[in-house]
Length: 356
Image 1 (tube, rainbow, N blue to C red):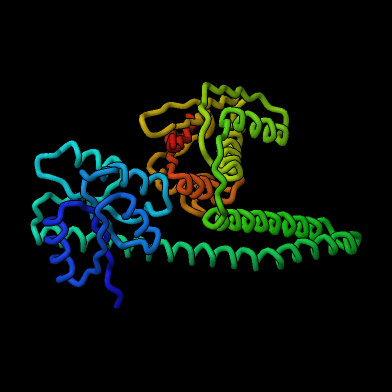
Image 2: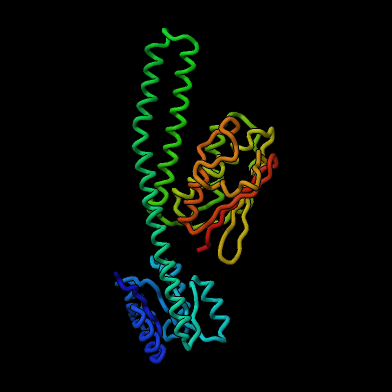
């Protein structure tokens, strides 16, 4: 069995000696860095399972190392435990804000240090196992959807040939049956396409660049409204900031959000869609409010699950996959989506995106 590996980043000899002896006795492999530049080299050579990080060091303090690892590197998945003094509450708070998982007070309490190290290594392994399971599930979903699409397209084409060659021999019931088969096969093909999109969201490489989100909302709205029958829709967009994101994924996100708003406001003679934004220190929050059919908040937890729908197919068409795609796109961007609504009084779709 592989030994879990810990990187100790500290410049105090007595602390290093105490921690190393303790950890090696508990069957951990330990590497040591006494400054930030050495720590980054060791991490790049071989990423550890966990980092014990002292707050105060020469050249670069622990806060800078944590910030870089959590926001500017490919190693943000490595858990970090800060080493700090007992009366330094401000450092503990700042460490958590930068993304550290825990802290241990110096001088070390042996049982406390080992308990925290064991806990976070266990959590890391569980997270890795879940990620692997999700990847396997995405791969399975893609394979099944891909393999289903070809026979479904063949079925649709065969019914077209049947209609062309034998329409004169069929009565109205027969023609209606062929039409129903064509419609249902088209619905399933669209569903398969959505499943393929959902699977691709996990594997698609990201190209991050500045995006004029307000301009994108207007452009997508113009494209979608041209596909609708003539209707009265009042689109209002307040200021929306530029964001950082993958243009292909963010456009797909906006398409899904506006498609829903347009779909669920079809029941209104005068439809209204209001788009606005707010922000805090770390993120932008975008809201898209409509005066459509709304939904019962008791079932809000089902909204972002695959194939979960709060309205029947007879009321509003859809695959039940669109919002799952939206949530997956936002997770790739370290953001989040949620919704509020009330039956027959409209709904508001919110999503957050980090500023950096």
